[in-house]
Length: 141
Image (cartoon, rainbow, N blue to C red; front, side):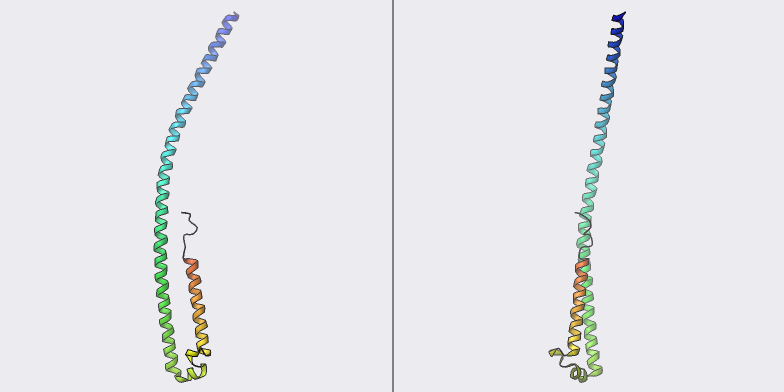
């Protein structure tokens, strides 16, 4: 009777062992399949992110070029308007503007005001240029 109990116990342990082996084998194969799928997804995502990095680099270059072109156009417009203003002032006031403000070449009051205004505007344009030169700085490449 004791021998039968031990045989049954041994058979139960063998069955338990076989079940554990099957469970581990299935878990391992399931893990390998999942790992393979994750590797494929990872490669796909890496390709996509590489494409995005390239796209952002192209955008960064084209945006800088466009910004510089627009900035140059605005500077040209500003210079043209300043010239028109100067010509209009000279036409309206004639030599009085030069006499009241001193010689423009010497930097009288009118010339100094214009000069300081030009410097301030140029500084503003440079500050604007610095702040907008890299609109994609928050993106890491």
